[in-house]
Image 1: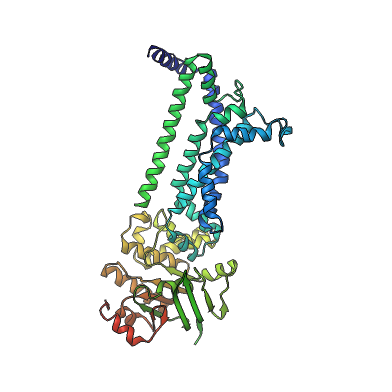
Image 2: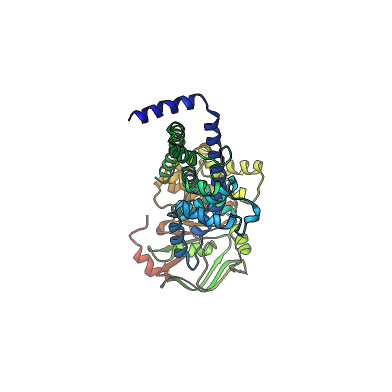
Length: 234
Length: 231
């Protein structure tokens, strides 16, 4: 118990002192997570809309596959991407391994299914009359899609926030593809794992506190969007 | 007589159920048609077909002498001439003015012209004081009037109304019926309205179409069936 209390006290002091190493790590984490979430949203939201609004052979199978991908362990994605971008891999010449780009690639693969399935759920909840009303008022297919996305914006916002929460807390992809290089690819989770290995709990606890604060903020946002969705459907 | 719609052997089948089976239908321009029938008679399906929101399973449908095809561009052109007001109209999230200007905005009408038109139609339906109100906070009757204003804003050639006075208090019913009468006389807008009420049909419609189990039927038998709901 003393160890935890001492670590907590030192961690707070580290945070108050605005330790540069700590802030570099937090900055890298936020940067790669934000880029991954942005790319995954640009892919996942339109895909989710198209899947929710089209009927095609194999749609159920596709939904099952997407749901299965939600449970994909980060280390599996790490291994998969590694096999492509390592020196002997197809994209080895691009020298992506152990870069922030590599982490982003892995994280995008991790959360595209999440954004897509949550977007499908958000769009499916939207009353079909929005679609017919937009069309009868003379909207094109694209304008109709924008109406639906506008009506489902809180649900879609919640999907994006959930995806951000997923990537900022993951460790497998960042470790395997980023390599935990100090000041470059070291994220909060990989730094915590390293500090734990070294028996240095102070930085690990400080990072844990920061991560929990960010997670709390993300959850506050998530509940705000969820609440708005609920209110809108009443 | 100039024909607005002409349908021949028009059917609509949902899964295994034939909900519409019309041998021949001809609708004239600039007139008010009342579409009467019991629940499940196919009124809403017919209105959706006439609004080009769904396509027929078989048969031919013509609009102003032009065959209706499933081509997207062609359908968009047709939809921009016809507007359907739903039985339970849904308003988009946001203020009333944004709802009313929607049809104009998607047609690329300028902001100034949109604003002017929004004010005009809201005044027409007696909702001008609600221009900035949150659309989702309106009552049922107010929502119907805003939905009607939204439809009228684009000055459609044909206005299709599914039960325009259903679930609306008497005061709002009267307002809605007067607006329909007025736009038919002043703008020569063709109106096709589905209703349960024979009294409304008698008051407004130049022609009454009876639907029974998806078929156009003789007036007498259905009048007897609906005799109790002539509100």
